[in-house]
Image (cartoon, rainbow, N blue to C red; front, side):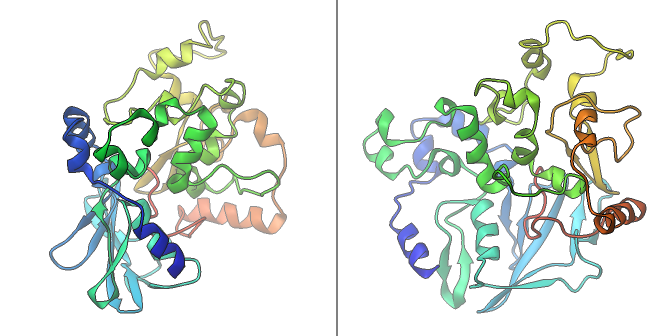
Length: 322
């Protein structure tokens, strides 16, 4: 891990200010996104993880060898502090700074841009808090010195799988073949690339459907998703009245992971009606495939009964679309 950190220090990052010298409007627009606000330093020494669209979780250094994920997070829907997902009290969870899985470093890495450095007292110091230009375009030091098309990454020119993998570096990679995923766990819907990788719309798109098909890279302004759907589904045959509902309301339903958190299910498909909590987890045709062990199915049922409240695939930096 130390060698990897040393190697990363040699990567020439330029910083958003350098990018803005030539791409001023784009940098300004991106600066107003939730991604750009994914990490903020507080005056009290706490780091605020998350833009606050849904919630904010706090992390602070305990000593030279550990960091604490606070047991209380702020939730916008309730406008109050309550237990952080996976926590049963307000004590928080401690993480070793140099743990073998580098958990806390990866959290800072995904919520910031550039190299996470060690400052005095072994404090983790992000080069640039928030997800900014070079988080997606790669280190731009050389490009800033000599702007050329070939010395910077252009996500918009990547095929769909490559784009989804790029986003998946922080939002979770699509599962490798043979790797089991618990599709019955509502918390896992926060990993958008994982679910999109299962959708027939993605699999049959010929490498055309990616995160960028429906999400603007430099702005949070909504795109016309209905127009994107109509490119393949010009005259959809609905078996029930849809009124003025948007495509995503039925085919990408919101999944309530807890009382105050909901995530959009990116497994695009036809879902069984009525849209009960369980019916929102997988498209109708997919719910008949595979299955869970009796013990796990019992656990999943208990989760729904008590409204969530346990960790699933990761913890720190929990909120995938906040």
